[in-house]
Length: 251
Image (cartoon, rainbow, N blue to C red; front, side):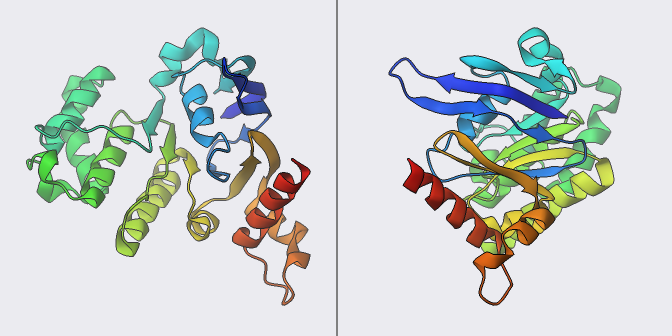
């Protein structure tokens, strides 16, 4: 579904945000992309979406190179960025209608699709309330609805549960898992909530200072690094801190 080959982003001031990145996301994955602040996660997502151009390397989505086919690729992906702007004067229904039309979603299916998506994210009763009156959790839900309104096969979620209370986090997790299992949507997600990632993702990449330091399935990681725990029960958090601190020490 996603393949990067030596993907690199270097800025004019010499800062390398992403360095020689090679990752593989397979169809049907819920893929966690993990790293400390400043590791290059958001920069990577922006390159994968075609919002910024890489300095070097290439990106393939569904075996298509983004530098050649980004317009077509954007029709098959959805995005929920960390810093999301909302049109507060619109209702949730108007907001979804607006973006569905931007994606050229079939008009004959639009009404039923909006109803379906609002029910998916638990916002059917708030469909005609202005977004400016939504809580943060409601905004995250309508943002997630926007990212799937056009029936994408791949969605990018950058910190989708940031700032939510525990119930809000669980609700968003459940929606993501349902999208993946029932609709076959491949999910690329960043989060600092490592317990959340370990519960919903089947594969992860761990990056630090723009470098990939591990890419593996959750199951394989637990076996590979089981010696990190004295009682034999290693967590993704144990592995994350071990690998990122080791990278810092090397740096």
